[in-house]
Image (cartoon, rainbow, N blue to C red; front, side, top):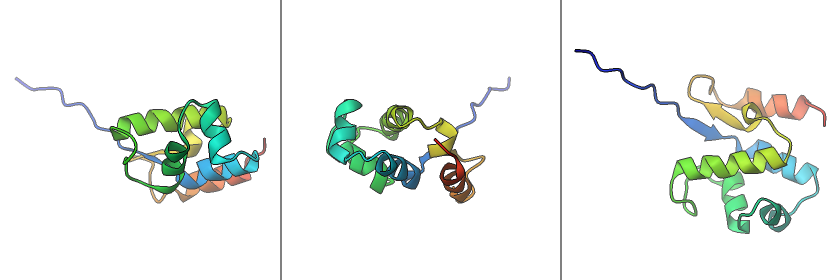
Amino acid sequence: MMLNKKKKIDQRILREVLSAARKERGLSHEALAEVVCLRKWHIKELEEADTFLTFYTMAIKIQAAKRVGSYLGLSESQFLSTNEAMGNGLSNVLDYKSSSF
């Protein structure tokens, strides 16, 4: 009997894209945190760290990034990279920088 193994998809937050989008809109860490119901240190961690020090799990951090990205008008493909399309993530950063709002 064969067991179906689920394929694990690792996601990585492209911090540079979230940071650039926030700055482009003239939002401080505090202002963005307030409108998306997070704390300033959560926003800073989304933009600056690959760890999840202020989040319980990486899955929760990914969900927070999705909330922030959505508020900033980004599609998930602009700020999330998966293990299949990961490369170095540079193409997502370049895609974001070349898109217009």
